[in-house]
Amino acid sequence: MTDTDEARRKRSEALRKAAAARSPEARRESALKGAATKGPERRREAALKGAAKRTPEQRSEASRKAAAGQDPVERRHTALKAAANRDREAHREAIRKAQAARGSEARKETARKAAETRRRNREAAKGEAP
Image (cartoon, rainbow, N blue to C red; front, side, top):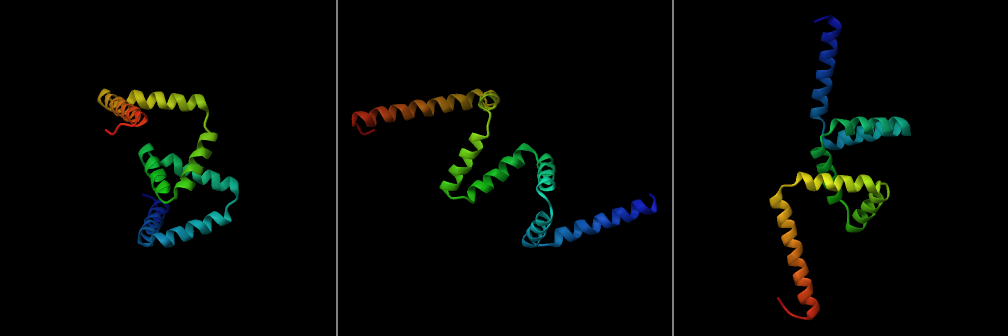
C-alpha cells in the first residue's frame, strides 16, 4: 500500500469514527448546514445519489416513518401530490406486478375480506344487525 493510500485510509477511518460518535442532532445540524450552502442542482444530485444507495425495503421504511410523523391531513396532501405526478399506465403496471408477486393464499384472503365487507354493507343497508 502506498503512502497516499495509507493516508487516505486513515483519514476516511477517522471521519467514519467521528461520524459514528456524533449524536443524531449533530448529524442533522451538519446536514442542514451543507444543504444551505448547496444550490438546487447540487441538492438534487445529492438526493439522487442517496436514493440510489437504498434498497426498496429501506425506501419504503423511510416513507413509512415519514408518514407516521404526519397528521392525516398532511398524509392525504402528500398522497394526492404523489398521485398527481404518477403516470396512470405506469401505476397500473406497478399494481399488476405487485399482485402477481403475491401468493395465491394472500389473494384468496383479500377476496374473502372483500366479500365479507360487501355482505356487512348489504346487511347494514337492509337495517339488520350482524
